[in-house]
Length: 369
Ligand SMILES: Cc1ncc(COP(=O)(O)O)c(C=O)c1O
Image (tube, rainbow, N blue to C red):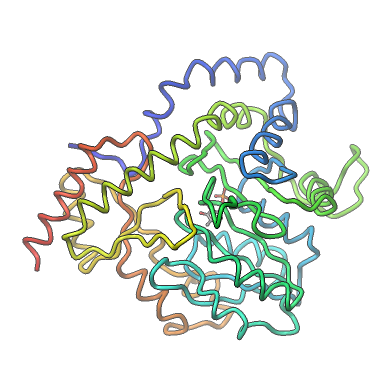
């Protein structure tokens, strides 16, 4: 059996006609940016999240950067986030000239350890940027309480959490603004780059809209220094064709997670923890295992492709050396990255494929205990 980590073709086949006819219409009309499809997507995806305002953006990194810029965060400011994330979370902060200040993660969920935030707050701190990694929301209530007490902004990195819920509310509505990525492999993915900002704050939404388009509301009138962060119409057509299926795809991922759990229970794998009140959408299904690299190679030999998200924490990357962090600064993060393994996860996986993955993991541990 050959099991891809993500299989885009299986999702594309049933939507092919609709997507191609939508793309044809865009090309016939030649309105390529910020047209009808982007405007509709802004309404539809904001509604999906339960947010008042939506803004289509070129990608998730720009979405984070635009939110931070619109909040006037820049040189001399600090933003508290995690090192256990894709580099873009910290990179977006660095792109504004502000400094990312890291906290460690909770070993059970691999998410921001909210109890460590307060100790990192200084007079320079302007915002907290929780990352809903792997599709599960950070424990937001205590985080929001700290933010409100210290008058800090809260920016959700929801790039992996389309539809994830926290105590009945969806990611994208839990802070001042949220960034989503529509990178092709995400639960809702474009066929190129794409991103989104959601917010309930009208004033902030208006500023972010301007920042997205070179600081401009009226063509060639530039009120702010902005960026080119526009979403294009072709990606919006693709995303609109997929959006009506997102809830079903997320439920499928949750079903797959239940089956993985049942089948892997008797192996030495540490299985994902769902916090009470949280409904994760399993962008990634991440287990913790001893002998991770050997297991990954063994699975590859059996035609099973896995991933590591992410092998080097942000504070130990060459690009962030100048921040002055060192090995040992975030022990939970550093231990986690040596153990984590992301198993194949997408809506179209079959039970037989999941069984094959689980059987292979069991076989590996039977031979290697
Ligand atoms: C947690 C996280 N933050 C930010 C991003 C950046 O999104 P994009 O790749 O669309 O720029 C990603 C996506 O890869 C991500 O996974």
